[in-house]
Length: 313
Image 1 (cartoon, rainbow, N blue to C red):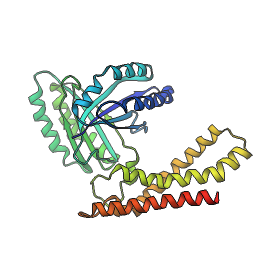
Image 2: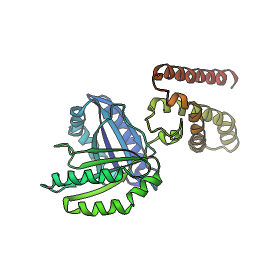
Image 3: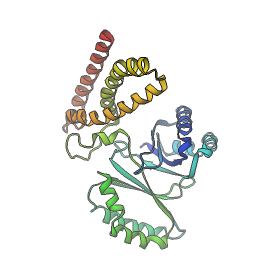
Image 4: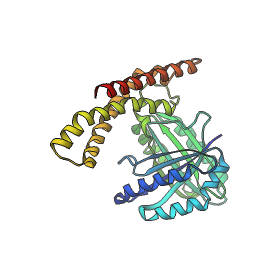
């Protein structure tokens, strides 16, 4: 079973571009590390999420542990220290059999338990798990014990169907009372919001099912909408108006184009996701044939767009 390292870090606002560049260099560096599978980076989305969230997947726990304790990673972290505020939260979680489940809203809760109080804390954890199982909108709950030599905290991961339901549980009197009861058992406790990337655009596709949608399918639909938006904006607005008429630099034109692209993509992707709900959540027993059919349709649409743009623009 693969393992994910989830890092949440607060970056100084004036160093956000430097951090993004540093993280890109780290992505290239870690790609050659033994056992590495993939890395995903989610920038802040204030006010709900103020942290950068980095997810790094490895083949197994040993590979993840090796990266966390490596001299190479330590050197990278020292280079980023001037860009950061406070401490990082670094958690190791075992991936579920079907991979990382996206959810519109999630939170990671870190707890450092006082020595000798571990057994009492585990009893308390079962109580809060039972209470939150009744919370409206709960999609899933994971509990990870410490990993000796790597992670000292107990980690709980909660996934909800909306920010409203998540916040309602975090602020609920039931939870506050349970947290107060756990105070004599814990040395440190804090929660940090962690939102996903594209998955929020797909929350309504194919009905209310909470089964996870493959990331590669979501990426294909995002590209299906993003490519024509970027191309047509560049042809009809970017070059003739922003560049030739207004005389704006390429950097400014690109920035304005990205604003339009992000806005239109966020509007259009949920619409196209609804049209491809049959593919995103195939009927039981037809996953393979439905997956191949949907991928073939989208690839054909890619090819048609490229051909039309190439021949007529």
